Length: 325
Ligand code: F6P
Image (tube, rainbow, N blue to C red; front, side, top):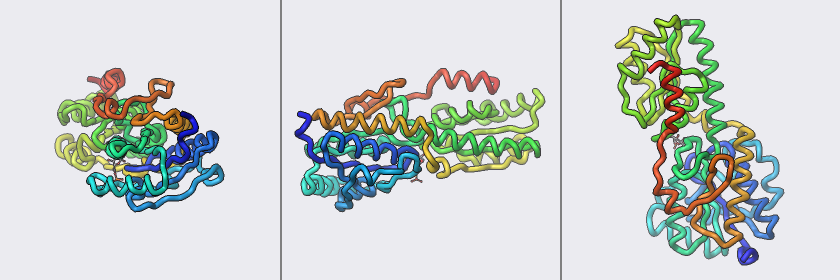
């Protein structure tokens, strides 16, 4: 069935993530190596609805492996959630003769791919989000870069907190997941980490941790707050009110989504892009490319979206021990 696929599309959708460009490059080059044409769709699902397309070849993806963001742009698209929107997107697929589509993004992107597949379009999803919150994969493109960016920022904050013997409250992204916050918290030696997966108890999870750190001789404190757990500002206010400290609050925000991807993100993105094209070339559809440890594998899109992910209990335990229970 290898030669039945003549032309595929690639798009990025939802929040961008460092490494998306490396993934686009891998899709285009893997397709071309098999004699398959590749069409870029700009602005995610919105672009598929409006026919916002561009021809892509090996040269058009030169010198992007190291660049953050996505050359195809990204968007969140309400119209694509409607049947009418999906019909328009399908019409574009028919018009330009797409035999398959690679959609790079988060679980919202995969739900879109799932909807489009019902019209008979072959789809493969690739996980690209800094949140690492996609249930069926151990890793999502962009997480490593975002975590390193957050760590670098927090190391800088720590320097000034040390000099002034202050408390820093840092809010990190992650949507409804605490994965990024917990990982970064372990990496910087945080005093406390708040994640949405654990109900927030100020006395136990913040106040007591700060008290213990102070008793052990510390005079500066780093509190990491996942955006899905609480607002950094609110936690800062509470620390001021209950403990009499004068915290400084930093919301890292979208800085975590930018920057040159790390080697891990470039390599994972490249391997995933290659796998996606291989699946489409083999006539497979409705798959999500996943990482299982160091292996690149794939799962059925319906099964993948139905799974539930929890925080790594071992990492949680390590954090608890490091910050005093
Ligand atoms: O999903 C990636 C993410 O950066 C989340 O961590 C965050 O909650 C959200 O996107 C922010 O979205 P926007 O770019 O629309 O502000």
